[in-house]
Length: 146
Image 1 (cartoon, rainbow, N blue to C red):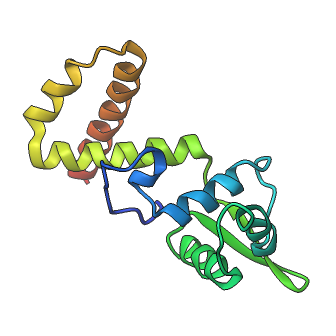
Image 2 (tube, rainbow, N blue to C red; image 1 turned 90 degrees about the vertical axis):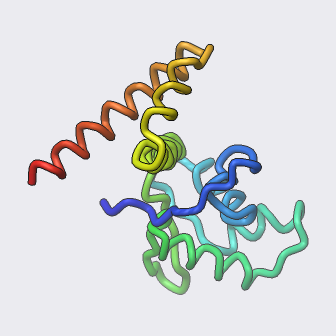
């Protein structure tokens, strides 16, 4: 599977909105709330979002198309509508996004990044980030060997 095309980092936004726009994040949360592998149509997403947010159907449709181009959704035509499925779980998305952000930080600010990660108070978070760092270093080592 190709990596989702997520290149923006907005640390001032909460949760997955650090990687996605507000509507993109809202749509992905609707899709991820479904059982894994279950598809959803634009109409179903719009029906869920519209009561909370006055938004046009075509805006949801265009945003879901953009999410598919970014690699976060897969679209498949079924009868008269496209059915969209998440290409990754929410947890996998977060791990990939955080891993990508860490990799960019390591490339640009290696020593400072590692030093700050060692200062984290949350052992579970520190373990997760350490695992991501090891994955990054292993992958970069393999790429350099090629």
